[in-house]
Amino acid sequence: MEPIHIIGGGLAGSEAAWQAAEAGVPVVLHEMRPVRTTDAHQTDRFAELVCSNSFRSDDADHNAVGLLHEEMRRANSLIMAMGDRHKVPAGGALAVDREGFSEAVTAALTAHPNVTLVREEVAGLPPEDWSSVIVATGPLTSPALAAAIRDLTGEGELAFFDAIAPIVYKESIDFGVAWFQSRYDKEGPGGTGKDYINCPMNREEYDRFLDALIAAPKTEFKEWEKDTPYFEGCLPIEVMAARGRDTLRYGPMKPVGLDDPRTGRWPYAVVQLRQDNALGTLYNMVGFQTKLKYGAQTEVFRLIPGLENAEFARLGGIHRNTFINSPKLLDGRLRLKARPSLRFAGQMTGCEGYVESAAMGLLAGRFAAAERKGETPSLPPAETAFGALLGHITGGAAAETYQPMNVNFGLFPPLDGPKIKGKRDRAKAYSARARAALSDWLGAGEAAAAE
Ligand code: FAD
Image (cartoon, rainbow, N blue to C red):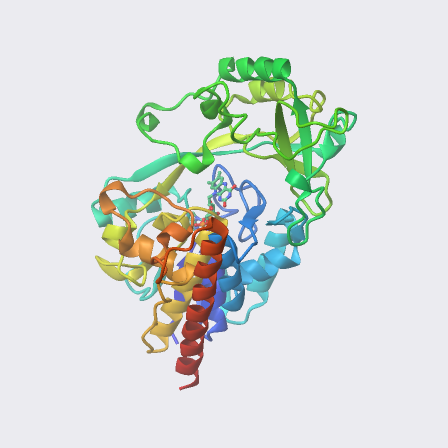
């Protein structure tokens, strides 16, 4: 059997390779690192997490990304299996030890008899004789390939900015001031109610910090980058700060549900840090993605009570994000209409986030494998998180205003029957409906495989 060629061994490409290989189809996975690297990756491992170590909420009953986790687990996802194996405490969220996680994904792919790993950049359109290709090169697709895709699709490149948050060594945090607590002591699955480190601020400290943040020097944009918008879900902290003096206190620095042990009360504002590795030695600053210059970051973030002597394992940064206009360019099975042998997956399709990228890799891998075996791939029902996200990307979203999107219940078809009042009850109804629909879909796949 001819192999499927997958370009890019990130979250999507690794999952796509696993799914196709598990379906019995040979895969060649082309990953350019370490021959050539990106501005954000730091290792040569597959499925490297370039920023936060969180897969977000693991609550499948009330949260669309939690539901997507569950669907991926049920569909034999490598990313979820390794995420579960290497999870670290994070309240109701699934957060992972980034090193252990990507090492495990790399080991699983290396050991799979149907997977061949090739370390090379595919620096242009793939050769015509690769009859099935999945492009999963992510937001930092190498410039040569990005230019070739732009020429092929005839589209102007679409882009926006994302920013990453700093990581602090726990031992450099002053626990005379900072304390461990989850908001409202919420435990969540696997959580302890004490999963976050909190650094409190009174009004004076907040004002001083805000002034310094707004005044600090930022990384300048290049001329061609100036009209590129931000993704609203990942705004740099200083951009949020400039929107109003209380914006941070109602956003990433909100103090509600956090009792300062020194006063027994909620402080005026709080900076939260979340565990970043299994050892618990590194913590990332939640919501503190930034484009401040490096020197300024150290200066400004050390104004935070408890972080006066903070040492940073990594400072924040900013990067450009590349994605195609999927609703216009792709068919329902993620194939490029102009060249159906090319299929797209991951963040390149305009989904947003580790989990969503891996989920689209999972579907692309399954679709490509089914075609290779002469079967017609069945699409996941629109009622599932898989189907809702796929439908959005491949046609549900307006092509003229297409912007990257996390999975959310707004992408699901409305529920039948009278409107359910509470948000949590509504979410539960979406999840219950999705579960039943997924069972039918997975069952149908199993039936096709058995034929
Ligand atoms: P990637 O995981 O980036 O994988 C793409 C792979 O393709 C890379 O390994 C790259 O080396 C390789 N590659 C690129 N070009 C070529 C080529 N021509 N030939 C061969 N290989 C190639 N999402 C979150 O959920 N949380 C976050 O905190 C978060 N922070 C982010 C921070 C940054 C700096 C960036 C860039 C993105 C962030 N994202 C975050 C968004 C997104 O979820 C991740 O980028 C995710 O890794 C996307 O998965 P992917 O498989 O599409 O791309």
